[in-house]
Structures are given as C-alpha cells and as structure tokens.
Image (cartoon, rainbow, N blue to C red; front, side, top):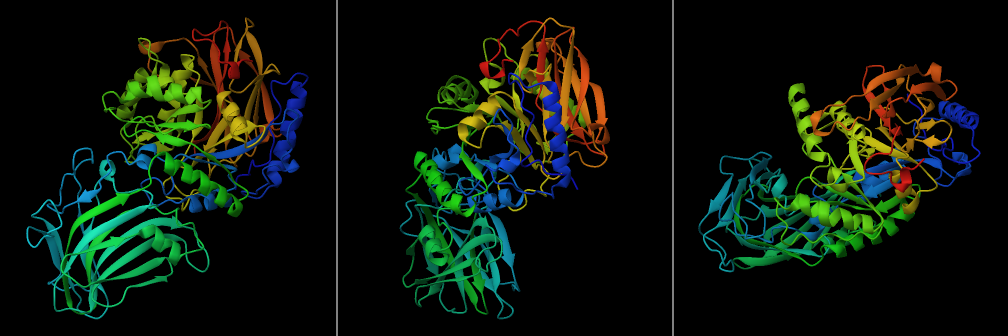
Length: 640
C-alpha cells in the first residue's frame, strides 16, 4: 500500500541560504514520515505537522477538474466534497461548464411531434427518446407518438406522447420513454434551482390502480440521516382525482398530482419539493439528470397522454455562478478539511478551457460559432483570464470522449496532428495562450497516458512552458479512488488560498499522479537554486540535479528523463525524451538522489514514477536548463 504525501513538506527551493544539504535533509525527513503514515491519513490544512518549510511552502493535493449539480451528470457538490474528505485531497476546484450554467442552446419546450423532434432555433439539435420498461408487463403495455389527441394549449398541434401499462400482478409494471438525447443535446440537464416544469396531461378513463409518471432523476449524495448514498429522484404521479400529497421514501420523493380535467396543465417545482422532502440537504445542490415519462400499473390497464412540456428557468449564468459561491460557504462547515476554490470550464465547443483564479466572469457566446470559437478563446477569453490574474488550462487535449483505446498508430497520428496545432504559428499563441495542459489521463478519447505525456514533451522541447496537471474530470462523485482517470495534482504552496495556489501553478511547482497508485511527493532542484518549473540560463556544460521523491510504492522506480530543447517546431512532431536515471525505493532511502546532468545543449528534465508493472503513475513538472534565453522570454514566475 503506498504512503500518503499529505503534510510532507517539500525541501525549500530557490531560497537564499538554503543549501543542497538542507534540501536533502528535509527530503530524508519526508521519506521517513511517509513510511509511517496510514493510507490517506489527513492532516489539518494549516497544521504544523505538515512540517512547513522555511519558505512557507507545503504539499497540498488538489482535484482540479470537478463537475457538480451545475453540469450534465449526477454529481453534487456534497458528494464530491465527501470524496475529497475520504481520499484526503486538500483542495477541490469547482469547474462546472459555463455554457450549462448559462443555458446556451438549452431546450425550453417539447411538443412531442416525433421521437426525433427538432427544437426551435437556438435550442440545440434533435432530441431522442429511448423505450423504458420494467416489472411484470403484459402485452397491452405500449406507447409512442400520436397525432391525436393532443393538447389544445400546445401551439404546435399534431403530437402527443401516449403511454400505457398493464401489470400481470399487483406489483408495479412500468412502460414509458426516457429522454436519452445525446452528449451534444443533453440540453435539459442543468441545476434545478428556480426551474418549473409545465406539462399537459390527459388521463384515459376506467382505471384507478396505477398512475402516469414524470420521473426526474437528480443528483447523487452521500449517505446521510439514515438514507443510503445514491441518486435522489422525484416521482410525479398523475392520478384520476384524489388528494395532492408529498412524501419521501429514502432517496425517492413521491408527489401525487390529481388530474381532474381533460388536458390539465400541471406545474411542477422540483426545488421546492426537494426542500420540503429533504430539509437536511441544500435544495440548490440538485440537477436534472434524467427525464422519463411512463405509465405505471398496479393491476389496471393504465393509459394516458403527455404533451407540451415547458421548462421555465428563472436562474442562469452569473447568477448560478454566484449561487455556487454561496453554496461553497454553506458546505465549508460540513467539510472543514477541504479548501474549495471556484473556477469554471469554458466552452460549448472543443477545446474546453478551465479558468482558475478569482474574478471569474462567464463568457458571452453571442455570435460565436464553432468556426470562430478557437479565435474567440485566443483573442478574448484567455486574455480576459490573464487580465483577471488567473490561469487557463487546455483541457483533455485529444477530446472529451471516453471510448476504447485507439490503435497505437492512430494515436501516433493524432499526437502529431495535435502537437502541430498547439505549437505557435503565424502569430497565434501556443495552446491558444493557455498556461496549463491536462496530461494526467490514464486514457481519454481513446488516447493513452504515454501520448498525453508525449504531447507535453513536444511542447517542452520547443520551450512552450506549460504546467502539466493531472485530473479526473469527474461528473459523478461516487468513487474517486476507483475510476480509471483518477489523477490529482499537488503543489508546493504557502497555503490553500487562491493566490498561493495560482502562484505555485504559474511557477510549475506541481506534480501529478494517480490517486490510487501514488500519494508521494516529487520535486527537483538544480545547483541548489533552480526549482522544478523554472527556466535557468547558464553557459555551464554540467549541472547537479537533486530529484526528490517520497512514498514510492513497492517495486516502483523513479525515472529521470531528459529531452533536448531544439525548437524543432513543425518539422519534428514527436517527443525526444530519453531515460538518464532510474532509482528504486531503496536507492531513494534518503528521500532524494543527486545526479550530474549534461547541459552542453539546451534541455529540459522531469521525473516520473513507474510502477512495478511498468505503468507511469506520477510525473513531476520539468525544469528547463538552457544555454540561451528562449525566443519567447521567461515568464517572471519561472525565472530562476
């Protein structure tokens, strides 16, 4: 079982008066401390037990790309904070999609004219519906789009959704349709705060044992108050007559809505129902995840029609962003061991860009098309991030999909294409001007970790100074440890405050690794004064590298890799790193190793931890050792 780096301080680097011997002594202490820690032991964020170094820096781990109830899946802020606490992650960055907060191209009405109904202009593409059935249905269970009857209230006539179900017993049998849509048209998935759903309902006659149902599946929350961990749901049950009622059975809310007239318009207010049903939870931390219309029978042939679904949203955009900030304050009392920072993920199109920093303003996408989007990022959004004192991250560079691994030859081709696109050309900034690059993905969009690292190394060989980070991009929040892409990023910083974290990231004082495979700490120091992330210009042809690493798992090794900074540009779109050192955990008994490095030519160095099975499970950021300054100059945070 690997050790935990929480509370293990980095040796202070780049500080006047701190010798290489001092660096090694601190590293040795760190290694000993890590060996004694249980898995995921947590230390208070500001505890002296973190052995804060003389320069004020300590190791803080961060989940840097996390989605909650303001994005399109079932995650909640509550459950992600529970996962951060469980896994001893110190900082959680909220990076919900800006365009989902803004409701860009979101559907506000459905007329049920077909199962591939196109929305109005500016409301996304076609919706699709999937049949959903469960329980002991008979052959009478059926459904589909009909042209009549349809609601007289609907301005688009000629369509309604018919559902019918009959159970062979008294246990419920369900037949209906789920709004499955697709990734580009999940344009009903958003936070439920301030939202009303209006639906016209017509019940067929002659049944009483059952109901028509609009089922809203909402967000996942951890176990609390005797309720299990899981998704919460709202079952709106339309019955012939009866009395309105509202009750909860664990995570499931049941709202009885009597229908007393033909084509009755029913107005549903999920947030107020959630607040009543589960007052111990923040009603604002629930998103609309799934939408299903059904007939449910407990014996009778239950039949009816739905038409003219309207979604009335009164909160969006910057108001949602501010609401999330308020929710952070409330949740801080429940999860005091996790520091929360609020960013956003920019982009209705690819590539997505994370905005890290304060003074976040959600962009206005009016007039922005897929063709103009990248220019909009490079000329407007990323400069705005920098003006606000923030950093921009170029996210999941190969795409946002999660498909099977592509053939290696195809991955090689994609690497070359993407590297060519990210390098500076014709006055366009490298990586659109971003400061960070997401490299810590075991596999994303069919592309493996090695090709993510190779992309980063191609940037480094061209002196494109990007801080590499590792992320999960998790939208669910129910198993940080066990998911495939479970990388986190750690920094050497003075505190978990926004300014200190941004400063550390800008300087490249960061490393990243798999949450389940490596919880140690990595650092670099050259000639006692050049820290990890920095760029040093010197005419000397040999320099002393001290590579620190703690908490190596059994059988793993620390590798030192070096690549020439040759400014190959578009001429050579491959990585050029070579292994120049490999050390076992026993050889790192002192917490670090010292190695002479040939610097007769410009180069960069980084380390990586390789498991007993040969997989890279962590990587440091580089240090650049140059004979001459790079053409683009050296940013102030990286000057040695």
